Picture 1: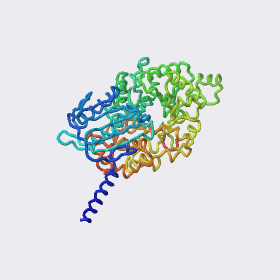
Picture 2: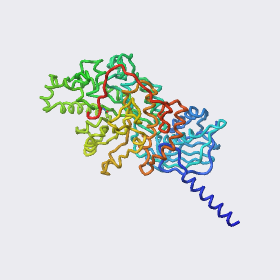
Picture 3: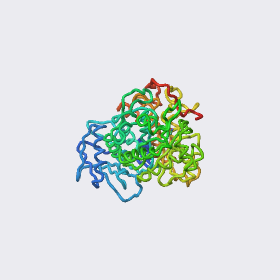
Picture 4: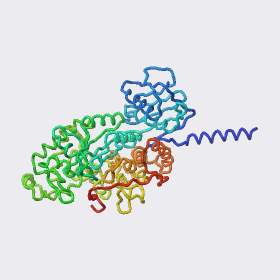
Amino acid sequence: MRKVYLILIGTIMLSFRLMAQEQCPIIPLPLQAEKGNGEFTIDVNTPLLVSSPQLDEVANYFKSEMLRLKSLPLAVQRISNAPSIHFELTKTTKEEEAYEVLIENDKINIKGATVAAVFNGTVSVLQLVSNNKNTDGNVKIDAWKIKDIPKYKWRGLMLDESRYFMGKDKLESIIDWMAFYKLNRLHWHLTDEPAWRLEIKKYPKLALVGGIGNYNDPTKPAAFYTQKEIEEIVNYAARRNIQVIPEIDMPGHATAANRAYPQYSGGGNEQHPEFTFDPGNPETYTYLSNILREVNALFPSGMLHLGGDEVSFGSDKWVQNEGIKHLMTVHQLKDLKAVEHYFMKRMADSVYKLNAKLLVWDEIADIDLEKDKTIIFWWRQDKPQQLQTALDKGYQTVLSPRLPYYFDFVQDSSHQAGRKWGKFYNPLQDVYSFSADSLIKNKDQLKLIQGIQANLWTETVTNNNRLDYLLFPRLAALAEAAWSSDENKDFKNFEGRLKRHLLLYREQEIYFYNPFNPSERPEPVFYRKTNHKFIDQPGD
Ligand code: ACM
């Protein structure tokens, strides 16, 4: 009898330990997650209760996702005694995005100090929901107690729609996936050499003429977002805790704009014709400031990315430009680099005057701008000194190094269509394992790091399957690298959770790369009508 009793105790203790250790299936992995006993059943009568009208939108988001993912039509109620899902604003924490989720047999409680925090908790519950198979119209989710807080406040994805225009439906579906992974910044690269993609009322030819073509077919009819569509997309993202930041690249990468308004072109070279705006023409500053005024009015994020990268790739004509020679004399600018800096400083002032934050690529770390109003994006992993300069100068910085965060690089050595850097490419594990804490030794400087971001340049994208193939599943690894603490990260464990997410990709017809079975979906091929070459090959 005593033996049976001991075995029983032992079995109970072991199962408790296994329960405590049971892996929370959520991506990105929460800071703390403890498995409870029992489960909560969501059925068509389960009320959604909000502690304040501010949370109506979050509850409505949950409602629409339950319909989309599980065909379960729920309703937001004011009061109810039935087992319910509670959305609650609380003062117990001040952390902006931290949340707690408690799932028990008779309730689900999602709480945080802000709407964004409660949204994050809601997404965690939705992930648990989507992990469960629908049984006779009900969804059962296991009991969990979760306490969570993001590592970074900037968890970003950049999409280049100049080279490949994906359009509103596909963009919104990517925004859905970003929200599902708690990514919260969409950096929207809207202007570049091939095309200009947003309507500017004061200068309509920017979209109508500049919008013609893409990287692979310069004759493609104009495609761009109207201001109404931009408003809809920005609102769609805002409901999902995502801020949208437009990039209007200058003074380089201005080719499409210069097709529309050649009077502001500073020229280019054979490889990059009409690549720059003209810093020697005083009218250029008025023109660009007018554009920025409209762009700023369209984007409530209060952030404008002005690019500032790779100007020297096509600034050859500046040497002969009389206006620039005059500018150099008047302002005692010693060379073309100084002209570039003069231009960026003036445009930075235009941004600050709009009370907006200026965002720029890491070339601009060389210039002294307003520290509290500027964010530098470090992208050249082969130039660590550029990151160091940004940090030494006290700039807030987002990390998006080409290795491992350029998603136009291939994920597997056998892939042909995307970029590689010598023998390097960007496999899932590298995206996952990146750690700013090991890269930056000075702990005070670590505080300047706002977060991390992946950039998807679209030279090799000619259809949505290829877009998916480059994004998935790396998007999930990016999310965990940006959210979860280094101590909590474990690639093998992540892979275990990811396997279930691949089922969701399949359900939603995402053309993803399967790292566990690479032959499941072949790499999408693409064709190209132009002879453009990549402009930042190794060595550039
Ligand atoms: C960049 O990749 N030119 C920022």
